[in-house]
Image (cartoon, rainbow, N blue to C red):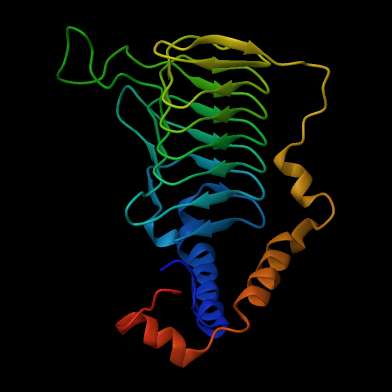
Length: 241
């Protein structure tokens, strides 16, 4: 389908069910989840382990084909912890796995299929169990990680920096740079004095009503959709559908 013909009443019911699932099923799986989260297809989001913390206005886009997974490993040697700041965006297929600690600051954006791990999960010589092969990962505020990038153990990515699509980051990244490649290297320097427009800007005016306004906009677009035409597109879609 090139258009969404779903009637607003159907969308409203699905939104209500999603909200119920987030608040009653998903929220208790976090050790802390801030106010006003927005999660697309929340039933496909997989949380495993304890010590998963998230700030306000967390936005997760997930799907059955590309689930978002947050995993904290716990054993005699490891006690994983994941911390997400305020106003973060997590895109489809993102995988975050912590054996020690992964800290993600405010206004960070993770593009689709990003992988972040603070552990090698097997030693070079002892391949039976993870041992002495983990180190904390830190993404400072306003970091943007591009499509399918991989962030390895012990890495700190400085404030405002961007990791290019497909990059493999194995060493620290300074603030205000763009890195790309495998292994990732600096390809551009950003001006530290220039004003950044961050995700928190979306909520400065609307506050808690931001997602409600988005829903009102969606309602306006779907208002003309009709039940009979929507059902027709399921069995006999036309060229303009």
